[in-house]
Image (tube, rainbow, N blue to C red; front, side):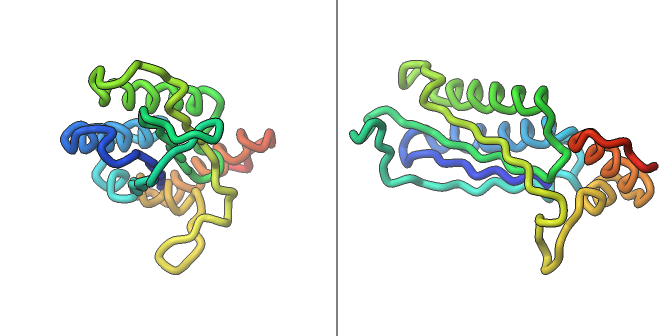
Amino acid sequence: MPMLDAYIPEGALTAEAEDRLLAELTDLLITHEGADPTNPLVRSIAWVFLHRPAAVYVAGAREVEPHYRFIASVPEGQFDAERRQAMVEGITAAVLDAEAGAYERDPMRVWVFTPEIPEGTWGGAGRVITLADIATFATGDPELGRRYAEQRLADRRGNAAVV
């Protein structure tokens, strides 16, 4: 159940480039969470929220070139160092590609944050959603979902999984 908050200044990209970018970022988010981006069930719970900052200031001055911020939130256990690095690299490259040369290709204008939401604190549909719930939804198999979640959380926390 990945969520992406995309902060893209108005007019930074063409409407078509922005639509393509947000579709590509959805695929990146799903892939680097460890799921299949072609799975319609998984896609149905991958949400992107587009935010439009009125202005971005750097060192106290209004910037003229667009600056971007992305917050890719996933349930605890879904990211590891490799997935985080791939997410940051992928988003940065996709944004700079979407600009299509309209601005200097400067990765310092793209910031990506990859927080994990602690187990038991992700809420939706009026209830707390666990990693096992999400894995079960994606796979359709409660036992597989439970085992997957236990292993990912054990890996994250440095414990042995109880399978």
